[in-house]
Image (cartoon, rainbow, N blue to C red):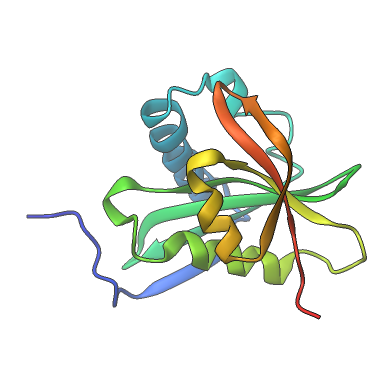
Length: 151
């Protein structure tokens, strides 16, 4: 039997406020970043866990995707976007990103992220514009991207 969740699954995206669901967020990030991408756990889990707003997508009550955002000196930073391998391609990453974009305060500060190079086209489809040169973060090539709000 496959673990694959159908595209027509019952989808919920929750802002996390309890430790049980935060554990599910960390489990997704562990699988995607630490296990699949070989990111050092010391780099993955940081001092911003408590000050960030975390979001979790559940499909048929199964944790499938996550992301977080936080205020920085440069604006609002979206980060730690991750989708479980078995449900990639179903649009769950875009759903989490759109939910977070709806929740980020629109206070004139820029909304930005550091996109992994392989995911750059995903972010461009969601109106993020790459700025500057490629750089390396956690041994993975990235680009800084800024969200272009609709006029």
